[in-house]
Length: 295
Image (cartoon, rainbow, N blue to C red; front, side, top):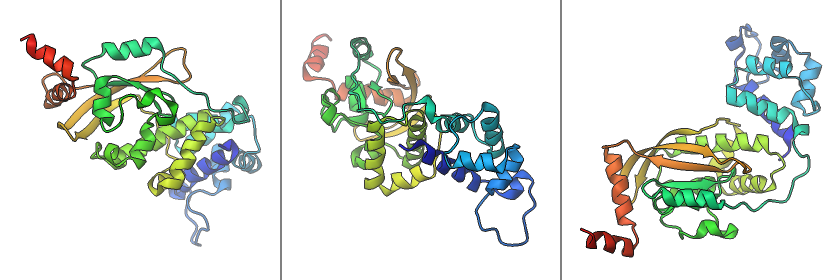
């Protein structure tokens, strides 16, 4: 992805979101030709020369200082995530300038062993692009029971949760609050794209989704930025009904951004009962038989 172009688009989108009166500028009686703040207004409020700001927005500054970026972020009222994203985009020299060939990721043996040990907890390992590298039985049953359980083992058939959210009808049906999930997925992907402008596989994913799904393209164009490491997912599963599950993202040390995601239900809740029912309903026949025999 073109970091200078991304930086300009991001800054323009945030300028457009602020009205002059929001920052104490008296609106002119004549009609304004731009939506939101003008470049010169933002530069004045941030204490930056209009020439320097214009060069920054055009991607012609390769080493903007922290003080300048912080001033711009403060003026634009950026969140912490958006400020971090601004710094990533403003410093492309800190990343490789040429796209590198996509690297095939694999879940390590210890991560797979951990997934297997979490028999009663839906869990999976993702790479930074949201490709599923591995999942345990309950993780597969929870999120993608309609797919082959072995699909993460082969890069050509490996599921990608962001792609599925926009292009896979059965996966999309899991989320009654689909619009909220879609916005969060795009915002999270934006952060990753800003940190890894040289990631060709990520650029291909964004390009594919932009071409195939207008709902993705329109959200991507708005430049949402947000990180999400934990929270609650409201799911509507075709086998066991609705569930509210807490999730945690745990970064796996020594990898290029791989993380383990685990889902849990509140003890004694209907969601816990539904999760237990899902485990029983999708248990292998041999396992189910041994459970009966052992009674």
